[in-house]
Image (cartoon, one colour):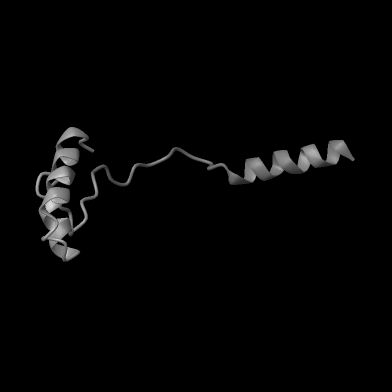
Length: 70
């Protein structure tokens, strides 16, 4: 039965392939509507989490954002 399994796998792979040339529908980047700039992210994050009173942690987080850009 090994030969039958090989034919089934080959037929399955052939069925998954397209029969013509590929077409690119669009090229671009997706920018979400709620995008936040990394330089202002610490202020944004601490504001939405009601943690603005943690100033030392906020400064540490700000330094991390500057040091490790994404």
